[in-house]
Every structure is written in structure tokens, then in C-alpha cells.
Length: 173
Image (tube, rainbow, N blue to C red; front, side):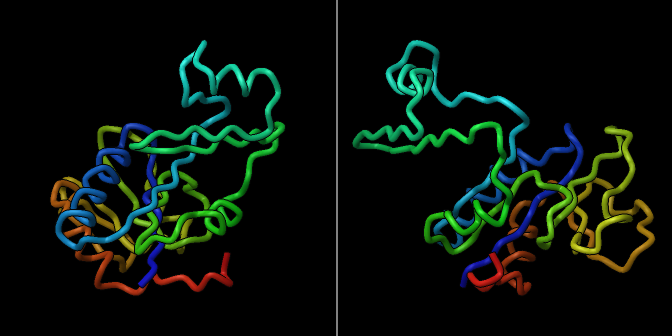
């Protein structure tokens, strides 16, 4: 089983909290190997200014690998050209499930996270890849025949993902 599912929504809708809790459910209840892809805007730094890896990147290294007994990371410079989601999916580790946060306009199956307080339009109206909506109030009217999920019930959302066929053949990306 290798499943890839996107978690899409406007800023402030609760995507990160949902992904964080789905990871816990997939790891603890289902014992799955999880990979998470997160889209960031423009510049971001994963190391602190002044640390060795930061200094190596600033000096011009095209790739920096940081390793310790507890974790390791690879930092690739992209020369102002963002890698697309398909490239990143091809380069993920072997995982049972890949959670993709962001990339709201990508061509993968997605769950929309919706909060009325964010005061934005639903994404599902213009995206046939949205197969479910996670919201706090399941009584909100949806003008499309898609699943409504309780945003605060992480186990049921994880179960929805497990039970549905979001398996992707490696040839697709």
C-alpha cells in the first residue's frame, strides 16, 4: 500500500494541525511509515543562522547533508526554480502513506480543510480532485456529492484515507 493524499485549504484553516494529528494516528494506530511534503512560500530556512550547515549553504554548496545519531536532512539549493510536486513525489522515501500539505491546485486527490471563520470560498468548487471536506460544522451546505468529515475527529479522517483507494503507481509521478 502506498497512498498519497493532499491536505488543502486556505491559510488559517487548520491544515498543519490536521496533518500533525494524522501522522500520529497513522504511526500509532496503523504502524505505517509516513512521509510528509510541505509547500513553503519563497525563502525558508531550516537551519539557524551561524550554524555550520547554514554557513555551507551560504558559501555556495549545492547540497548540504546534515547527519546525527537521531536524524538527518538534505538541503538542496534550487537556483530560484521551485521543484514541482511530481518531482518531489518521485524523490520521497519509501513510505506507506504520503501526506501533501499545500499545493492546493495540484493534480492529486485532496481533502479540503474548511473553516467558516477564514472567510474564503470553498476550493472544491473549482477542483475535481477534492474528494472530501473536513469541517467543524458538517451541517454546512455543500453543493457537490463529496464526503464531509469531522475536522476534529482525526481517527475517522485517517480511517477514511485508509479505506479509500488513493494508491498511486510510481509511474504517475
